[in-house]
Image (spheres, protein in one colour):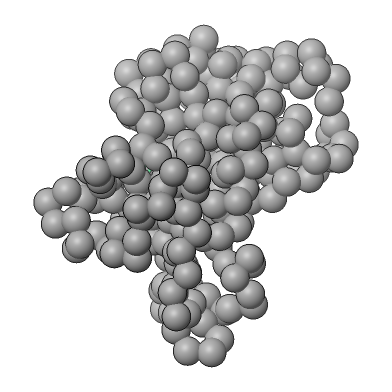
Amino acid sequence: MVSVLRAPGCEDVNEQWFSPTYWGGKAEPVSAGGRGSAWFVHSPSGQLVLRHYRRGGMVARVSERRYLFTGEERTRSFAEFRLLRELHDQGLPVPRPVAALVAKRGAFSYEAAILIERIEGALPMPEHPEVSSEALWHRVGQVIARFHCAGLDHVDLNCDNILVAGERIFLIDFDRCRLHPDADRRARWKERNLSRLRRSVEKRVRPLQPARLERLWQALIAGYESRITDRNA
Ligand SMILES: Nc1ncnc2c1ncn2[C@@H]1O[C@H](COP(=O)(O)OP(=O)(O)O)[C@@H](O)[C@H]1O
Ligand SMILES: [Mg+2]
């Protein structure tokens, strides 16, 4: 059994749209910053990103693509679709969700996929030519603070999930993320998000000297603090 959730205006999306082979040459694997199960798709409704949900690490050996089914609304793809809509409606910089798919496999398991609007000209932060500009890191800090003020706990905040497109900065990849709208100003999960990001920066933005990297990180924290204080959230 297959269920597809569509955004308004995306009624032409069908089950096949979630299969990269259906698109032939019109789907190309994303090379930068992902886990290898995302494709850029040239669809009749514009440029999209298709992502299949996959596990990493040890559990992947048991089942890479299947998850325990406990109701449609709790599936990875439907939950991420709804969260993206909510964030987008709040005016936060996220790509628009287009459609989400759940395919039941037997009574207890499912596979999932999502289609999202592709942000034109976007590059993951580590690939961006301005990755060593303090001004960019300052703005990234401000953007993260906006999400935190809205209560968004990004459980996989790494630098590849921060996209830079010209003057604009987006967060992506909201699988398993949660909203805590009434969170404290200094909630623990906010610190966890930032330390996760810090670790990924150390791994991924390697060619920079440690002292340089530290200055960039301080610029990010300054941007973050400026927004948290401004809004008194
Ligand atoms: N909406 C988007 N617009 C442009 N590029 C995207 C978009 N979503 C994802 N990408 C690209 O695909 C990569 C992987 O996507 P992501 O959603 O982070 O999945 P995962 O990390 O699980 O593979 C990103 O690092 C980015 O390079
Ligand atoms: Mg990612």
